[in-house]
Image (cartoon, helix red, strand yellow):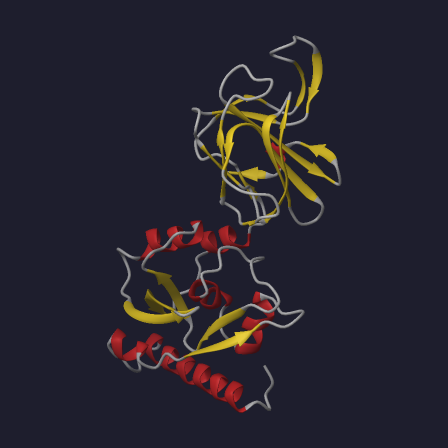
Length: 279
């Protein structure tokens, strides 16, 4: 992204021209059809260098980060990596894929598809052609922005009942008073268990207490443990994303019924999951 680069200069010129078009539409100087507006969209590619992030790229391109995030199907602000090739749209707006999947895509689709005018465009991503609903000039709402930027973690189950919290308790099997280092989430056997954040599967085992369990290592020396599983749905050293299916609720190990025993540890020290997770 160098101003001396001919292609980058052309991209910036395209962005500036489209910003002027948007200003004319908003000021009612011109009232073109949305299809005609979208015909001015051009899409470039860029490979991320060391130090690049979503905000720095958006600033250099003079394009909202919401446009970059939506057209690249970025589920969370931390998802970009060095060496990754991303798309650079020349038109500010939101790009909602036809087959929306991530939580932010579902949120965008729910708030816009039935209520706002869009035009369908074809976008080539990684050798595949995908259909997007393009909303020229649209941006994240405050709720969508908060959701996208929130670095908090998600619960590992979609539906559950908390049966035991973090803290001192009477062990339901032995009756001994002990520190409970996690949270117990009751759910039917076979219920899907998801990774609570991006990370790497660093341990899978079968323990007399935890039963079948998985440990995932996340950034900032944070680890998550998922115990009493019926079965695992991942393998050792696999890189997972927030919401990746990793196992099924079971009742293996020291358990009185089907539930997920879930722990969080920071630098090896147990922390209360309720303080970090969100639905």
